[in-house]
View 1 (cartoon, rainbow, N blue to C red):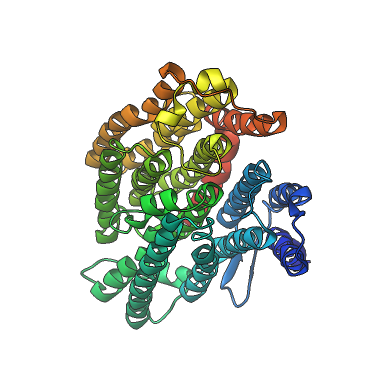
View 2: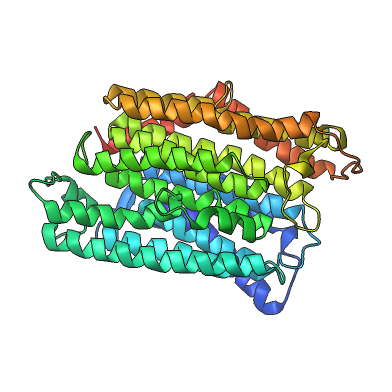
Length: 466
């Protein structure tokens, strides 16, 4: 019966195999069935929420945290394929393109269940290799080639740092199992080599999360790669980073050296990301620096180290992919010939496509953290968890950064609703608009009725940190 507990991973692996066959056969009609198959994958992940087991010599664990994030990854992959379904005329959206996307998502699903450091590292690399090939795919655009080179070089450097840190942990603790590591001391006075090693190992996941100082690739890659790829890179890989950071943060206690490092990096990341976003004109580059800032917000819950903090980080990561996917949906839908939209291109969007302007407004309000959106509820949980653990200075920094971010997020709405433009109305299929409307509705629903999702995240947090 164990095989049925692995249905989310197996279903996505089946999609990868089907796309591989379609690629070998030269078929280009995958969009007739891929969004439906990805949608069924979400239902399969919902059915697997209750799965609990350990396998492969206790290196692979099915628990509340892993199943929660598998659902989020399956949902994100389904949304990205849905966004791409509205771009049937794109020459780059071939079966092998979607095969690489699905392979990356499959690696992230495996990452969600890995509870041993070497296995974690292998799953991380499996999810990353596909992106190394995907990011440069943008016709003959030189910006895509530059983005691909930067992503690969930064990824290679951070991978080396993470492996170096792993060697320190193994030398100091003589085990790579997270459960065994949690039973030992992580004070710098007791185990300096292990603390240094853990900090270096976390660098690999800071890179995925685009946390300072491993964020320099983020705006350049968002700007250079094609819009659909940027929508994926900006959201789904961050779920894999968060699930691992939540697992590793559970072995720490508040106000230790490592949690203090997380808090400091979070404060710098949110401040630097928001200040850099203030001067951006390219919408995708703006969203890139926004990702850097939101990585800092996630650190609030991880630094808190409590069950409430871990649950808040898990909930906020899901809220973030909802609101960011809604923003990238607008970018992909209004983009002409796959070009990057600028702030000026948003002028008059309310007159040219009222539904798109409304979806953009919901996404922007949620990214700021205004009620009644998922962003507001998620930030409230994070701030409460950090405040309860005595991180008063970090909460103040986060609130000030939220105030700074109001300027550029609401600037998107200002351009869409008050800017003037002579551009013609956008012809958008009704099915595509309904898809975007559902995304916006989910952002609002997760803010108005957060209990169902937060209860799942809280169950995971309590299980890790009783």
